[in-house]
Length: 291
Image (cartoon, rainbow, N blue to C red; front, top):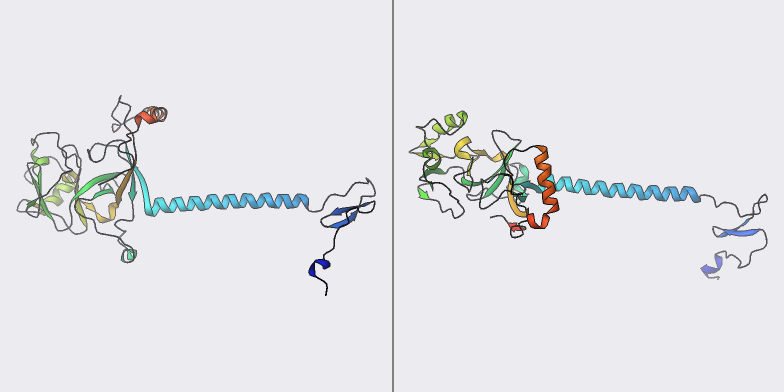
């Protein structure tokens, strides 16, 4: 029996005149030019190869985009701190990655995922209830069922003082509404809607946090526009919990970055940071976990 190799046609090393090897077989030269004819299918093959590469690149790009959109939508999202309300825990110019899977979305999937409840002391990012397009970051002080009050800036929850090593104070206790909360005998401070709701939830000088809502405050206690002034944060408004400060940049020193600014001001600050990135970066805060 012949071996399989012997069944493959071989090409002579010195083919006869007028014969040239083409694609593993012998073809006659063109009778008009005496030159070997064009190899059939060469250009279409190259075009197909290029088309396949383009399609592969597009598919890879689309896959990357889909993954990025999925991550941003369901897992993590980047935020920037624009105000001093959370100093000294979070500073203006801190850039955060927020874990959007911490608390779940209140659906059926919550029973199958390792979500947890919002705890007192958690820092949360949420849609501002009075303008959901805005994102706020505050610390949870009261959870559903809590009874809370402030006396000379000291927070009391369910009758006992709350230990708050993170709280930052810059002014004396000279604001009766801000520092002694809740005050239903004063007409200054809260929004009208919150004023009406708050009066219904105060018993024995304590504010009762209703089910499905949270009372939040900024760590910069004397300079924070928080639940004292506009009310509770509904569970549905919570986006997630900050994980890490992935970058922190200080301002140019010529203006408060949190103040309203024009497009030109923003462009100037961006150009400044871009050209002074080493000096502008707070390296001691970069990659710091948020607690």
